[in-house]
Length: 96
Image 1 (cartoon, helix red, strand yellow):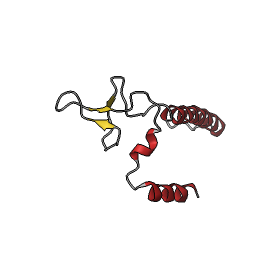
Image 2 (image 1 turned 120 degrees about the vertical axis):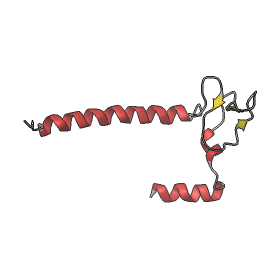
Image 3 (image 1 turned 90 degrees about the horizontal axis):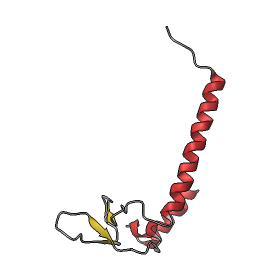
């Protein structure tokens, strides 16, 4: 037997989920301004791509270390591989 979903109840649940995710996104954006999201608790870089803040780990085969120990850098620019002008143009294009 198939049970129909009450459209109003579905709408309320969808709005609640949207509120939860919106809060997570805001928190993640703010945290990314203070700390790289790929930096683990041992200051190791877990990114699967190159970052100019990466330094060799203490032993071969270990994760790279994050060179920004003070967390005062804006990490987001470290990931740009297009160069500043092309990255800025791409950001402008995506904002439109």
